Length: 303
Ligand SMILES: [Fe+2]
Ligand SMILES: [Fe+2]
Image 1 (cartoon, protein in one colour):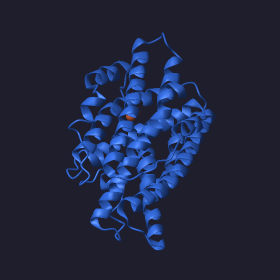
Image 2 (cartoon, protein in one colour):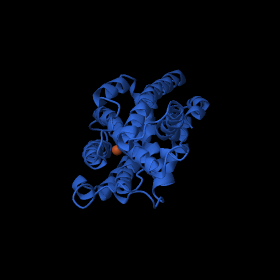
Image 3 (cartoon, helix red, strand yellow):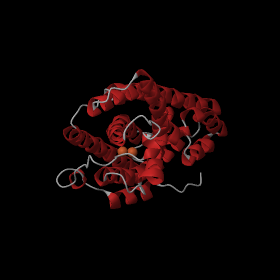
């Protein structure tokens, strides 16, 4: 592969970024609930034309809370996965083990950051916003798949988060600055993770037959299907959270429209934007052109 990623370079980049949780959340760094949290490219509240501007903002904030909670949730399986992967070769390459431990340490920090955010959101928003889980059950279901399938899933998730920030968050001046700052700090460290995921996928694919690689791709698709079922449940939670917070009781046809739009918004946010990311497709093609073709054959349903 010609990507030029290395354990040493990602470790150096990570060390120069390293931020502390207490410097970016709490104290004077407060959420502003008069502003939207999520870019419209991910929130998809505008197509719900039966909502007032205030109701759209409330739904946008519900989606923002869910977004960071879901990141916390997936990081609960990324953390043990990276630790297990690091442990397979402790002595051959000092930069490898240090870069992977740095990666795991950052994910542990992100999990803690998102828990801190969740509490602050709860206090400021004023009503409950449930999120799918529990994280350990979801993690166990994902980690039951073979390592290459899990590594491909993680690759997709981390490039997806890169795409969200660069394409739709960075230049959006309407978003709450504090929420945007959390996304920016997360993105800064995720940029290294996406490169390390590429190296993990390549090392796990090394020496595997095309049949074995395609079995892992089917595992990736099965994990995607499992997460997609969870997202369908999350849309129901978000609809309830929205109605509780806004006091607006949606009619039957409005609920149907809400489900239709938000189901696809969730699919695009957490699945489609990752599986169509050019870097994900390049990595899959590098290990087997068939792997890329298989993912490209199903991705339109998630876009
Ligand atoms: Fe993270
Ligand atoms: Fe990450």
